[in-house]
Length: 87
Length: 87
Image 1 (cartoon, rainbow over the protein chains, first blue to last red):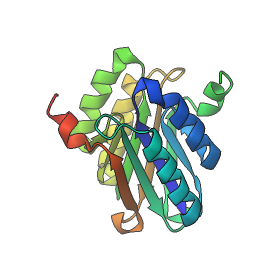
Image 2: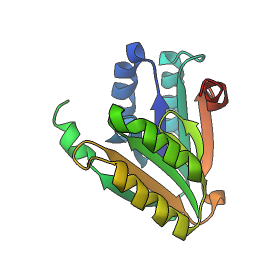
Image 3: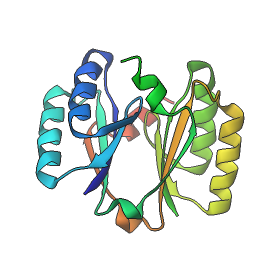
Image 4: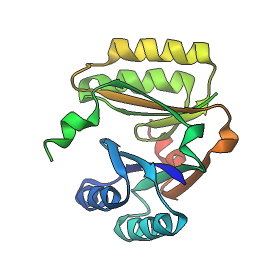
């Protein structure tokens, strides 16, 4: 399936969450990831994410669709590739 | 059509962008919005967003699908409603 993952995570935990999400998905904006992933891998990612998160402060939303073809994407402004170089 | 909008905007401009996006879509996470919108309204939103944005620093990504039914959404952690109360 194809997913879009967005998070809002406290500063103390955001580095670990970024590292985790990049192992499974493509990083496309500060706190936004997308990519093709299996149900099993997504379950694993969610489990690991909840281990990092503080439930009262942090939020993680996953949109999923069976096939990327149902989604259209438009980017205005800066593309992340330029930001990627600083990491 | 149904859209998910995510932005990464410089601090000086983020208040204006938040206000703009809330006029058109539902705010679901710090810099994430979703909702049903017509093509005409989306065009208007994009035009106004580009007037706020600094192209070299800011990024705005819009995912769209013809029908919300193609998208599934899962929320882990805090839901925005609680945050909404502070605004």
